[in-house]
Length: 286
Image (cartoon, rainbow, N blue to C red; front, side, top):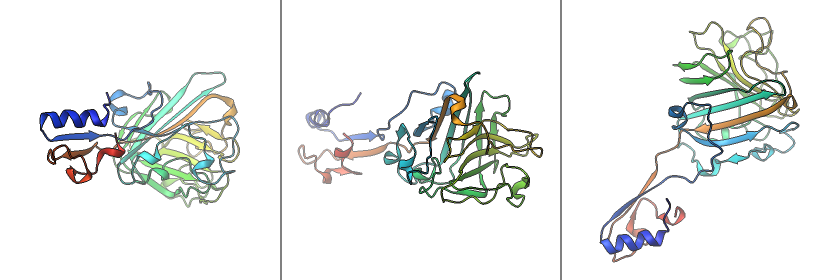
């Protein structure tokens, strides 16, 4: 329950005591995810939600404004206030059931604006074998291995530009196919790539967790490997388009900072000015 500030003030003054108030950022949250385990989801707060449209060119408007997020909480999440990020991707074809994947990891960047869709103008760029640590994977896809994967188990390929298969064989990738080691990714507008891989040593083969590509041409997307690594493309660079799915959702979550604590010194005979608070005054929070 949320109480008006003056009610708290009157109560504290009448009791003659100091008070401590903890405030959490007021986040907009989408409908709770029912797929992800409650213990995992409870650690995170939503940063972005994108119901992917049937047709789009995210490069037609530069920067974050080019992506039609239904939830954007970047203004409420401070740079450096989180240590992990999670991606939830869900697809349901026009004939078939829903497939989803959730992957959380140590964040590659503590700026929330650098964790969304990498369209042109955002400057988002994770290429040349960008690895991330300590994956936690959940999914209903038979193509994906669930569990915890320590160390540099994850690979990101996030960029706005055109790209090619030849990444120099980084991290054991194949220069003949689109996989976790592609080359040429940059921040200029083009085909675009937003891909997450699990290359943990305990897996039989590396796995595409999800691929969301074709950011300038209504998408190419999929969950799990598109084909067997080493025999064909695995990352959905040229996978099915958005309009072949009735449901296509992308969500980004981060582990939230602890609540801000503000302490009133109980002095000043009901004086609630800034000087009476340790921390920052509560007027912007209440």
